[in-house]
Length: 296
Image (tube, rainbow, N blue to C red; front, side):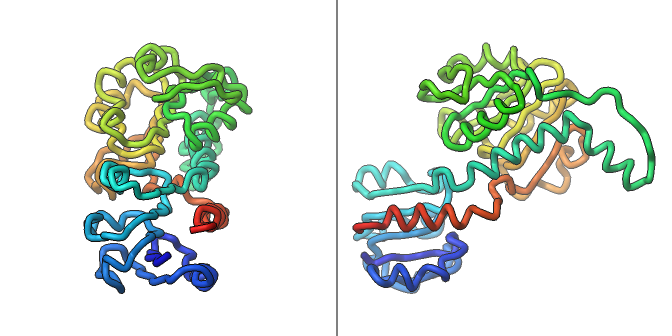
């Protein structure tokens, strides 16, 4: 197969020679640059956002796509299905670090770590008597795929009652119960912590809107490690004083504007779309890429 490999696969250089034992391979570091080959030459692509800069219909002989991301929101899925192009994502590659990140964010808020960090800098010895426990808290995980399930495992181990919300609910040992999306409004009123891990689709765009944010109980925590547009940020700012805290790793417009009030809120943790990072990611990604290419 004629393979176009992009720099979205960070360790591609380490495996290109191995790929060349069975495939013809060309490499491009930046997906928005001119291709090092003719569009018609390409039969398979290993990359991420290449179709944001190169129209997919130019790849007349494309039959295989391997994404380095878990999400499909950067590819024209309707075209891919219509033309029977085989596509794979990076399911499971980033789930563990993202789940660890979600737990870390909640614990930082529950244990008031920002307060203690500031006092450490100032050499102040001040106790706090209002720290919270994860034990027996109700956690709603919206999106029960690989990332959501890794979150469920970890919150369960802390003694939490974990409820899943999914487009296609099913039985899973890590959830006390899993419900369909139309149950979300009712679940939100009884939840201490909401973790968003859903893919961005028409159905999940602004899933957390003014109406649903209003349903969150006093002191609730909201964690978004999905996509920025899953949360209506303008609506969210209205409820920040009511909430116990918010952990935001993704935003509809990135980078987050320097003028955003979110940077300065004491109960908001802002990170630069970084939750997926872990030292074993590339090892997991390499395994998926090589397994999926067998026999192609």
